[in-house]
Image 1 (cartoon, rainbow, N blue to C red):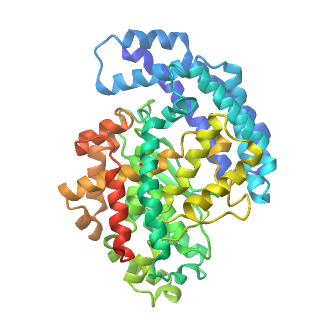
Image 2 (image 1 turned 135 degrees about the vertical axis):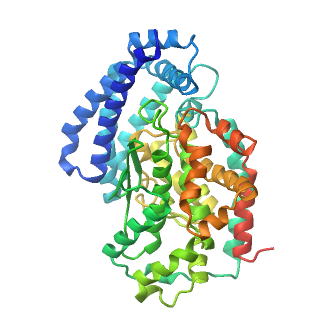
Image 3 (image 1 turned 180 degrees about the vertical axis):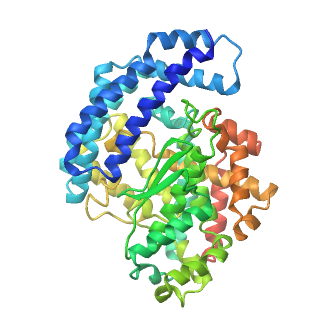
Amino acid sequence: MNFQDLQTYIDKRQALNQALTLFSWDQETEAPEKSMALTAKSVGLLSGELFKTITDPKVKEILSDLEKQELTISQKAIVKKWLKDIRDLEKIPAQKYQEHQERLMIAQRVWQKAKLENNYQLFMPYLKEIVATEKEFAQYRKTNEACLYDVVLEDYEPGFHVEQLDEFFNQLKEHIVPLLKEIQASPIKIDKEYNYKHYSLNKQKEFNRWLAGYVGFDFKKGVIKESEHPFTTEFHNHDVRITTHYYKNNLESALFSTIHESGHAIYEMNIDDDITMTPVGSGASMGMHESQSRFYENIIGRSEEFWKPVYPRLQTFFADNLEEVSLEQFVQGINKVEASLIRTEADELTYPLHIMIRYELEKKMFAGEVDFEQLPQLWNQLYQEYLGITPQNDSEGILQDIHWAGGSFGYFPSYALGSAIAAQIYAHMQKTTAVADWVESGDFQVLKKYLQEYIHQYGAIYQTNELLEKLTGEKFNPKYYIEYLTNKFTKLYHLR
């Protein structure tokens, strides 16, 4: 057998994936409210076909034969990834898998309704059932003495487990929680009232479209739509779609959502043509993916260098509100630290604390240590402990994220890991490139080419630690993130 024998199955697998992705995109952007029940049946059937394609005995035979042959690096990665998928899926009853996919589709609409109505009780039965099923599937897949939560973490962060994540989050507790308390006690107060004035939605849409193109989003390969929760969807490197959400009384929300999602999209658009339509044709991990969006959004997008050439244009668009706001005041405003309840609106310093809360709750759910009736109260307690604030209702508390409704357990830690990985990459770039000059001159093509050369083109051929080691000379090291946050916010708030 040769690799071409596998290609037919690769094509079918990708076609089914794309169909499911299109349904998911449609449900978030265009589909009518009452479409869900019948659409879920189609999603279930397609998921069943995908399950059969991945676990087809003939495919397993081909892969087992290819595993013994001399292959290219990308071919080896495809074979390795597919064999892992088979090991994971073949242990799960096919009918249960299909039923679970249908249930998740419905649960996401129930979550939307529950959030709108501030009604956790409406969503709770679905959450309990989803967690029970995800734990059951994890138990099927478990191969060693690792905890069940490690099994789902592996889906998003290959090579990272609870032991490493506990160490990482403990460092955040040790350094970032006290830093936040220092800032909260600081006499330095940053005024950003300008951000909450009325901003035309149509003008915001026009500016954000320009902004996406400015940082490198290719409109010949992508589109921007609107959704309640901004996200990125990729079909292949020539069809990558992002969404954002506009608020008439919060200018920076859409600005940074657009930059963030553009970072994700640029990663996908720069994956090599030879692997884009294969099982390794996406990011190395969710953490590495998030590192690229956080790199663009925070490290680059909240810097003074970025806004020097961009801010005059923003002022022109919104002269009534920004004409008297200096560049210095604007840059301070977009970096203001203020504990808030909503993860997606959190400032750069407090953001990882939002993730830490979700991480701790997910571990408890998978360890069977939480009463789902009491989950909102536990959520609120952790917010008070780490951020010093308490949600007033479930919509701004336990119901604020869609991830659990979609069965995405083990996903949240990637957000914090991504920020830390971005800081590590940036620390290396500061030593070896003129990255600040690129940004200040608006030369995002050279930045994009750099990231493509060292990270993007490889897709998931290499794991996160392999890419980091190839680029920076060391594996994941959170010290760069702690140093980055400490230095940046100590300077901003004139501490110590």
